[in-house]
Amino acid sequence: MQATERRFSDRTQLLREVALEAGSLALAYFEKGTVPSWEKYPGHPVTEADIAVNKLVHDRLMGAYGDYGWLSEETALSRHTQRLETVWCVDPIDGTRAFMSGQAYWCIGLSVIEHGQPVAGVVHAPVLGETYCAERGKGATLNGDPIQTSTREQEDGCRMIAAESMLNHPAWKVPWPDMHLANPKPNATLLRMCWVASGTWDATLVLWRKSDWDLAAGTVIVNEAGGIASTHLGEPFIFNRSEPAQRSLIAAGKALHPLLVERVKGVRLPDPNWTVRPYDKTETTEQKPMADMPEAKQLLHIVIGGELKDVKGVEFEDLSKIDFVGAFPSYKAAYDAWKSAAQRTVDNAEMRYFILHAHRLLDPETGSHHHV
Image (cartoon, rainbow, N blue to C red):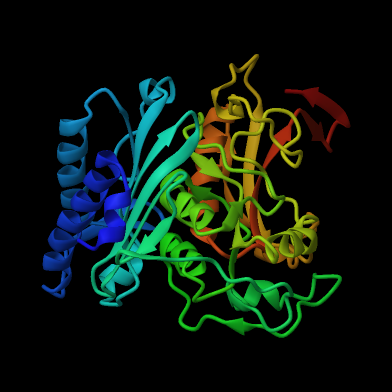
């Protein structure tokens, strides 16, 4: 352990030790070449390694601080966790697709959340030999050495980690300037954020919802490296809410970050914890998701999706290619179906799914309007 790592508290040191131990376990599976896998839900694979790492991390962290809440990609959500002030937030393997295909771009992400904010985080990428650590007020390190975000002050020529198809989409009123795009682009969001924190890349942009475990560790690492990690509207993240997810991500140095927010703030993306108007900025208080709201009566809810002509609008590119997910009698059932469908389109901002509330049916034969 390098001297700079000793700046961190015992709790952060524990995160680092557990991340290294978990990385060794995951690497043993990775080196086998073939790992049993299945789909948790359509488009979201999980492997035997994810489950094994999740168990190891749970046993080690909860064994040391058993009164903390537990928030992990591979563990069922608990309402009890949302009521606790301090929570472990874990992504056993971020970049499962890369892991399954034998690519190096995957990592272990561990963090501590207090009052909705990450206060310590560790991201460990075993194949790359990179271990990032950060603690609020104590800076960020890569393999023990201090790191800082870049000081770039303009978009033109910046080093960006983002989907090329999104940046090149014709719907942008002002085309993006020439930038150096990451190729290959790592699937692991935490790695993207850490590369921004280290100054290797200037920024990363995701115009789609990301789960808390995809962002928490990376957020404190970026912030402690002198950058800013937020939604595309510039909102600070609030973690451990009713729906553990954020609407989007921009991570960059302090000079570049507001320029990117200004460019993309017109893109309408719902906050997963929306209450009234999904495109409004959220408050810094606990939100109640619509999925948990009581149903006054049975209604007809239709879940559909397709490619949009304009990422800022709701007009479909080709109505003949609309994806009809299904019709549901309650918002809760429709919301679950929408969530499953929507999460298949990560990093594809123009592919969107919606819930259509049908409150009145027209019978063309009789001309009658039936209120549902």
